[in-house]
Image 1 (cartoon, helix red, strand yellow):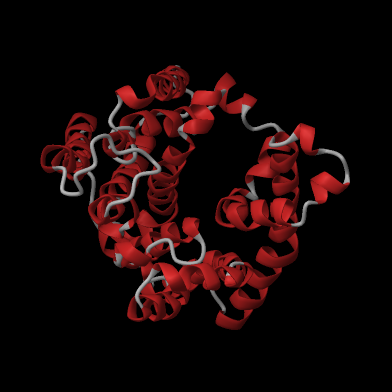
Image 2 (image 1 turned 180 degrees about the horizontal axis):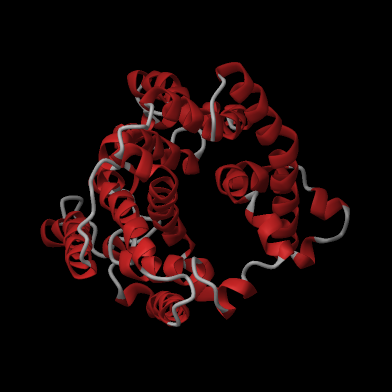
Amino acid sequence: MAPVVNAGFISVSYFILLSGFVLAYNYSARAQNGELDRKRFWEARFTRIYPIYLLSLLLSLGQLKTEYPTHTPAMFWTGVVLTPLLLQGWIPAIATFLNTPAWTMSAEAFYYFIFPWVAKWKPPASMTRLLWKMAGVWVVGLVPGALYMIFNPDGIRTPDRWSYGIWLWALKYTPYAHVCSFVFGVMLASLHGMIPRTHPVRLWLGLLGFAGIYVLACMGPLVPYVIIHDGLLMPLFACIILGLGGENLLASALSIRPLVFIGEASYCLYLLHFNLWYMVHGSHVLDWLGLMRFDPWISYVLMIAMALLALHFVEKPAQRVLRGWLNVWR
């Protein structure tokens, strides 16, 4: 279990790839037929991501006092202005301003912006040609990390998740560094449509994807951080999505009601997990209740519970209000 927890950062790349897949699955046909209204699509995406994004920033306002001394005044105020606008990710120095996970939404906002044009791409009729094109996108996605390893612009001997360098942060947090994962996900939706959901290969692909990621996670520092952080795992993520998108034992096992119920709150949990962690530990509630000996597992349970509350009492009500006001579909 420890290797998986230590490699938890790779879930961000999976999230970006999955978002491309889900959008293409739902909207590509409309885009290719000229039926996708860009303005209404962007409004729908705004109502999906912004309520919890705004909540995460409001809960993070206390971090302003720690952000100020770590930046120049100009960069601090740039962060104050750009972060609510989902633009902080374009400047590595402030990409994690206020709430570290929020940089992902800055990247996603850009991908939502370009999606109506990306979705117009018509995939080849041949699966072989499609696979070759996906392989090309994968290779291009490996280029930024490979260049970082070759030139080592920050002078960091062995970069890891705790390392700091302006070029490393550009590689980790900026939208352009992850765009290939998003495009790969869009193309994956076409491959998904070519493989029958009941085909036995889906089960084996899913098992291969999970096993491959577990093996790489167990290898730890033997796999360069700048490569595994984004790019390397695209094919394995694709295998997982294809496996879970089929009708097989793996998909059934991960579709049980409790997992689906918790999974609905995954966006809330991801974006709020820093806030929720600070709330649990900053309040010392576990000390008062004599439960610290069960940490961190009890913290994980509490964070999931609070994410579910945010989903049902903030995200969904806010979405209904915004969608009614803007008159948009999902």
